[in-house]
Amino acid sequence: MERGDGAWAGLRLLAAVGIVAVATGANGAAQDADVHMNNGFAAAAVRSAIGGAKRRLAREGCRDLFRFLTAYRRNPYLAESYIIHEILHTLGLGENPPSSQQITHRVVEACHN
Image 1 (cartoon, rainbow, N blue to C red):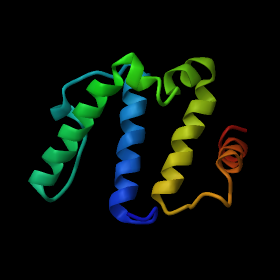
Image 2: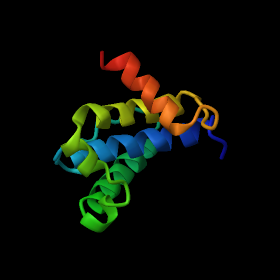
Image 3: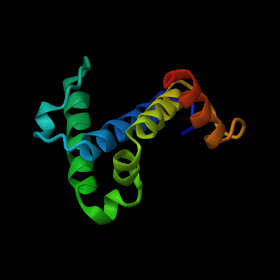
C-alpha cells in the first residue's frame, strides 16, 4: 500500500491511538473502543485489532520498540507532537522530504507556542 492509500492511513492512525492508550495507562475492553463505521463487521475487526495491539503493547518488550512511553514520561508535549506528526501522515503528508525531524519540529513550532 502506498502512504496516501486510505487503508494505510487508517492503520497508522489506529497504531497511534493504540500507542497513546497504552502509554497513558488507558484501559478497558476492546469492545469499548470508540469505532464508528457503517459496516458492523469492519467495526468489530477494528475493535479487535485495537484490543490486540493494546495487549501486545502492554508487554514491555513490544512497547519498547516504539520508545513512546519513555518519551511521554520525559516530555509529554513532544509525545503529543509525535501523535500529531503521525496524523499528518494519515492525511497524506509524505516524508523525505520533509524529513521526520523537520515534520516534528514544524508541529512543535505550530502547536506548542
